[in-house]
Image (tube, rainbow, N blue to C red; front, side, top):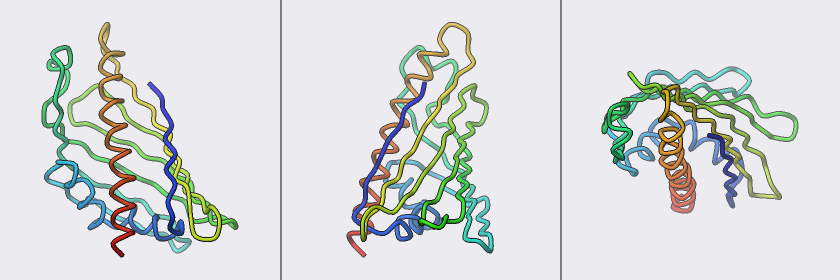
Length: 166
């Protein structure tokens, strides 16, 4: 299952990037959607401004019957977000990968944060979800895609509110 999401912000790309890569902000964002046990595994910043952020958390899932034998209602996940340094136009690209402990589901994708106009920016997230389970893998990937889409949309609202609050 693949989907793309584009979020626009009325704030400079560097302000949005700061929120996306600050562990305290990321922890608050995850907790605001009901995720728990959010911990920082590592945060590495290159001399060029590139950032790799690795976090761990527990994601609660309201599982449909067909998914209960494959997924846990409290899924422990590790997420790695890797962001490039900004290019000459201020565009950052990146990738993310979410690994669920003991699950056959793989969530990954690409990121692109680009300035737009004098003070705005857009963040494009391309998500790929795979599930290697015979017969029901597609249904499980579809379920995870719906849950992931809600989380991505929540992130946009949360970042907007945080930036508006200053």
